[in-house]
Structures are given as C-alpha cells and as structure tokens.
Image 1 (cartoon, rainbow, N blue to C red):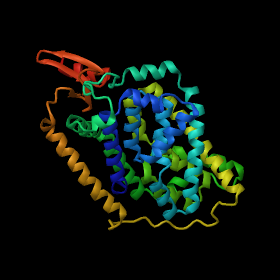
Image 2: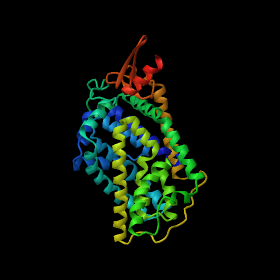
Image 3: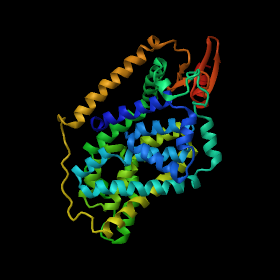
Image 4: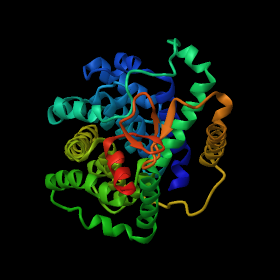
Length: 392
C-alpha cells in the first residue's frame, strides 16, 4: 500500500515545502482568500493540478491556510487533491469499473459544492481565527529582503534550501502518524477477511440499504486506517461483497477522515476544530455518495455485475514502480540540499522545533522558550509547553 502511494506522498510534501518557501501570504489571499464561488472553483482546480496522498494533502492544506488562504478554500483544495485526480480515477477504472471512475468526478464536484456551503456554517469565524493565530507562519518573511516576485524568489539558493528544509521537517513532524497508518492499513487489508467489513452494512432493504450504506461507508474508512489511493483495493472488496454503489463511493471519498488523519488534524488545528471538521466531512461524504448513486441510477449507469477483485501480491515493473523511482531520486536530491543547506547561504532564518521537528521561521515562531543557552523556537504553544515540562 505504501508502494502504491509513495510517489504521491513525496510529491505532496515537496509541494508543501515549495509553497512555504516560495509563496507569500498575500499571494494565497489573492487566490484563496475567501470561500466565494470563484475562490472555491480556483481551489478545486489547483487541487486537481497538485494531486497528492491524504497525508501530504493535509500538510499542504495546513500550509495554504497558514499562508493566508480561507480555511474552507484550503479544505476544498485538500479534498480535490485526493479525490478529483486522474491517477485515482485510473485505478478505480482498472480495479472496479469505469462507472466508479466517473463517480469520482461527479461525486467529487458535489462534495466540493457541499463543503463550500456547510463548512462556513459549522466552523465559526472566531474558532478559525483562533486556530490561525496558533499557526507558525506569518505575513512577514525574512527571506523576502526586497525580492517580491515569484521568479526572483525561485532564483534564490536560500529559498531552495528552505523548501527542502520544510519538506523534510514536515515529514519528520508527521512520521509517526504516517508509519502507524500504513502499518495498520496493511494489516487490515491482508489479515482481516473482506467479509468482516460487510457485516456492518445492511442488505435487502431497498432505499434504507442505500442510505445506511452511504452513512456507514465513511465509518469503515475511519477504522480501516487506509488513505488516498490505497483504499481502492478495499473499496473493490466492499463492492464485490455487496455494498451499495453509493456506500462504496462514500468510502472512497472518506480517505480524508481515516483515524491517523484525524490525529494529524488534531495536532495541526486542535480538538474543537477537528471534531467539527469530522462531523462536516462525514455528512458531506455520505450525502455525496448517496446523491451520486441516485444520479447514476437515474441514468442506468450502476454496474450490473460485481467482479472478483484480485489484488496484486508482489511488486511489478509498471508505471507505479517508475514513478516511485523518479520521485525517490528527487527526494534524495531534496535530502542532499537539506543536509548541505549551509552551501546555499547562512541558515540563520530558520530553527527546528525540538518537539515535533517542524521548521520554524525565527522571525515568526508560534512560541519561544528562553533557556540558559539561548532561545528555543516552536511551531506552537503546545510544543513549547511539552518542552518546558521536559526540562523542568
């Protein structure tokens, strides 16, 4: 499962690092500064263009939000980057059928529209601003030093070193959640029979089956620990075992609320916002799956057969292997740049949070702790408090 999503994971975190290093708060505000229809449309299109796995998408969405993007727009970007992408559609087509590939885009568009309506109503402005204030990135940027255009920033060696640093730091910050998520997902996919998952779905009750399956689909995604394109094999198993079309679609959409990602959201945004976000996601994903089934049923596009899914059990020399090799090579370059960052200029602008490993701008840290040897910089007050408790 990790092998299937490895290249997208690297791409997502690399994009996150690039956004933090090269894009200013004002630029994010111009593109995604509100949740009006034009901004939501731009966010969805940008998400489709920068596809990534769920873990990397969550990190990139946090970066966009911290750089000044509207929270709803940043969330739409995250949803689009994991659910409105070509590679997911291709895998769905190959493993389950073209109908599910089409449902990805139809249901994804429905989900984006619903999120644009629901999120601003369940997330009060005061809570959003409170969370934004705790983010480690602010409007001022020492690396700007007169460089105002994106072209000038991209010519700066220090910017490239900072981009690599952000990428490595974000991976370091989320490494535990990512490892736990993939290990548990692999165990559940291999060690738990597919029929176990279908016991929670009802069958043979007409419309009630359709509704219940769409509601339960996201719940299975939460407890399965499966993210991004990795949930497609399990979706195929659910479809083969009799789960409704809408239930399977809702399950695929719910990759963004698997348990490891909920832990990450809590780490990035706090418990209150995470609880509201989970509620909104669950409702929107279930309704999107249900509406998608009704639309496809109206056009007679629900598949008539449920083919047996045969998941690959060994590595193969295919496009996934080639992409992984290419992106692993690119990651090796980023790691080299990070380890040799002093070659690109004095590295006095940034510090590393000693608790979570995030790269923090010294000019705009989330928190500071004074020690006998100097200052320690932190991404947030939570990390500072943990550090303070450990040194007392």
